[in-house]
Image 1 (cartoon, rainbow, N blue to C red):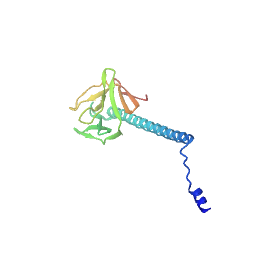
Image 2 (image 1 turned 45 degrees about the vertical axis):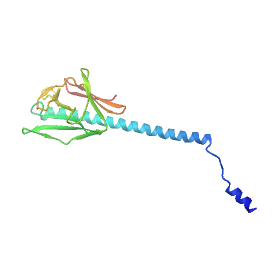
Image 3 (image 1 turned 135 degrees about the vertical axis):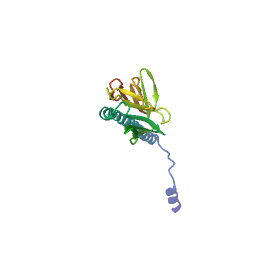
Image 4 (image 1 turned 60 degrees about the horizontal axis):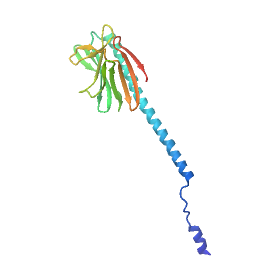
Length: 187
């Protein structure tokens, strides 16, 4: 009798996973995967939108500072550039004949910034030694100008937008070069 009881107690069930259990596991994995993918998309959209809003705000502030504090066009200007994977903007200003710079402001890491217009090819922002965007405003009329490293300025009427992008999430700042107006929009 003892051996019969031991035999019954030690017997293992050879059942595998049922099809219903398998379907439930796959459904749970699918729901979790969808939740993670959604949150990654929301995070990427937030990073691109934050960079766009910060940049639009800085450009508008640059115009106000130029019109209120600059002695002449080109006294205050801003560079937008990449350092590694991070995009920065930095304001420069002339004081007493010397050029000073403010602390760089981080727009975001692993984001793309592109500028262009109808009459020019879109250009991606690179590091400080390659492609960067340098903006300033005309002191007399507020129009958008291009600051050249020699301290001179030139017409910037070709740049009509700046885009920030993280993967498929893209946001646009529209510029009206003739008036210096910054239209902070979302696409």
